[in-house]
Image (cartoon, rainbow over all chains, first blue to last red):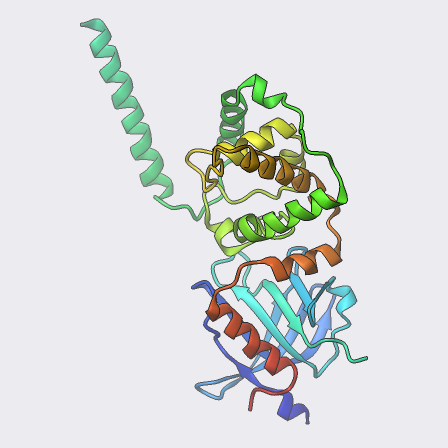
Length: 103
Length: 191
């Protein structure tokens, strides 16, 4: 099941040239970073990436904006992380999107 | 004759400084302005805004309805550079020179209402801030309303930020991208 959740890194056609959205499943969550397992759509190569989170990272659980600590990100859940390749800090998430919390 | 020579010397000196500056640090907007540059430009801006404009009181009252209107206007026109939160943390905002400031910080919040209004209406030359004046009383009211919202930025709630997300303009491509990501998160996409 977890394997099925390990999905695509799609170097999404970002709205602006240097923004890239990675999609995959959560491997680990720490206070200021989240580890995501991704698979490149083209090469099918799996990768594990740590994304950093700072005070300006927008975190959306469904349609609601929440704080990173309040997002209650669970291991194995699907996640989409957008980063800006031009940012001074490597792999700093500008936005994290998660499915709406189940009721 | 002497005056002409001195003018030429000054012009040559300015040209030499420009060459050194542009060649030395590169012709790029992708750098952080030095503290001297920031100090010089903020002082120049303060000096350039007429005293009468600086001291103008905001004729628009601070009410929840006004804040709501300002929020809607900000999300639609300003957030692409300034971000919904006013942090300036957007791709465009951080690519400008100087980068969009964090408007929640004292550097913006300590400006008078009149200064904020003047900057919105007239823009800031040599930066990414355009002049938004349309020369009508309605336009001025909209700018004063934005000033009220800028004052509210440090207290912006998560609910308001979520509401603003829905008010941000999006291209068809962005909407499609959103749909694709939402499908993935709901378990409909991927391999």
